[in-house]
Image (cartoon, rainbow, N blue to C red):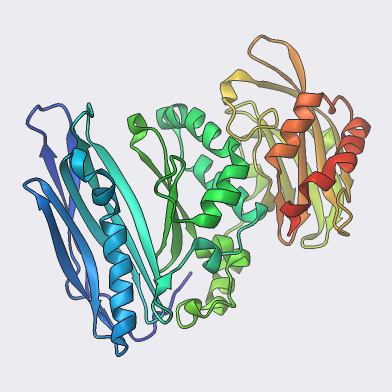
Amino acid sequence: MILLISSCNNAQIEESKLKETKKDNIVEEEKYTMNQDNLYCSDYKIEKEEFIGGENIRVYYPKISGLSDKRKQQKINTIIKMDALDIYYSDAKELLNLEINYNIALINPNLLSIEVFGWGELKDSIHPSSSFYSTNIDIKNAKRVELKDMININEVFWEKIKRMSFEKLNGEEKECYVEVLGDLFSREDNLINKVIYEDYNYDDYSWHFSYFTKDSLSIIFSISHSLGDNFPVDIKYVDIIDNINIKNRMWDGVLDLDKLNEEKSKQVKKNIKDENIEIFENQCFMTSFKNWGKVKFVTARDLDKNTLKLYLIDDEGKILYELMNFNNGFYFSDESRYELLEVLAVAFRDLNNDGLKDILVVTKSLDEYKSEIYSSNVYFQRDDEFIYIDRLNAEIQKDGQNENINMLINFVKENIYKYDSCFY
């Protein structure tokens, strides 16, 4: 993905990580200093401001200057300053130490995106905590920009975020994070309807923040202190091109859709022969989907994890699409607890009456007690994606409506009305 930043010049950002060890030698914190004093745009420039709230309290934040409309400039600077000092104003009486700095992630005549980060320590706390938040500014209208202004947030987008979160984990890190992320994403109604749509919600323990760079969107979720306080997820614009709200003029002069589509079309397709899998030949079928044409649907076992793998491939064996890899119906389940035995059935039906074929899969697995259980995966076709509704699949599992394909189809058709909002 290539972004064209109109009339803007980013001076080279110098970053140096300085490690400071606390006097008690218990906690070592990474602190960042950044030289962004020379950042400017055709309409304004960035200056660095400092707030001193005490001997060990420093907050650095950006201030814009040079706007022709001084009232807008003052309003923008007030928003930036108040956001940067939010944590100070919230805990001023209890703070022992606080150091907050910033990074300009994107500067543009229309959009200014700022990362704010650092660490603080309260009087009664047993350890310092890291902080991360962000401020996105609509320069022309002198107001905050929320994620929903820039991105069309729906179930498809949400599944991509979950996929990216899961795929970035590996080895020991995965074992540590999987339970925390499972809890995070199980609160789906809260995250989609409350946190993502509100965006700026620092007072809520489930807060998240987002910011924009020249080629990607970054979302930071709050997690437990033992795992670092914050969990960042970066997703390239090329991977969410269908969710970008191109009608928003803040993308003008920034996003080159032609080059973005060209990059997407050039993405290298893997061959299924290169996957470490065992294919269930009796549960592979030729079919067709509106956005892929004639394809082969392949079910397989991941030989490394002994979990289900599902693919759409062309006649040369190239992978056109890989469906999200679920385990017993739950994306963040502990994979070591379940052992895939077989794929029992596959069906292609239009379950939500939108004219597009959807996919249903029923499998049999062993749980951690070596008991046989039936699992289901229901995927709904939408644009060039298949979406998976966690809440629906959890309901299927809970009611045991997946022992055969007909039972599963009937249950989904009878209950799909509860999830109409997921398809808009």
